[in-house]
Image 1: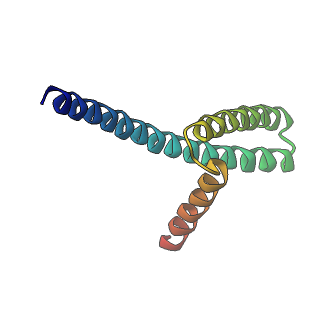
Image 2: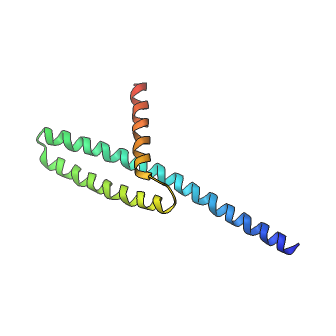
Image 3: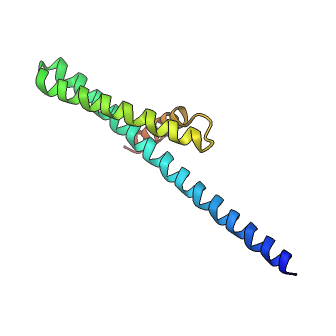
Length: 106
């Protein structure tokens, strides 16, 4: 009887750990998607500033885009360690779908 209760508690502990990890992965996926959206916005603004010959502001935005890019790669690497197959590509696709939905509403 003691072995059964011990195994039951052990299984419950593993179940809780696994569910907590999936919550973290889901939250990290959302953060990755938001970072990709921010990068796209900043990249667009940098190009727009450069077209209007606002060079200093465009350089600042390009630095911000590079910072986003490094962050995206770190987040994707972290998610790959947790078993997500193609985190960056999936997040880019989700961001595009959300943007399309938003544009259709307007």
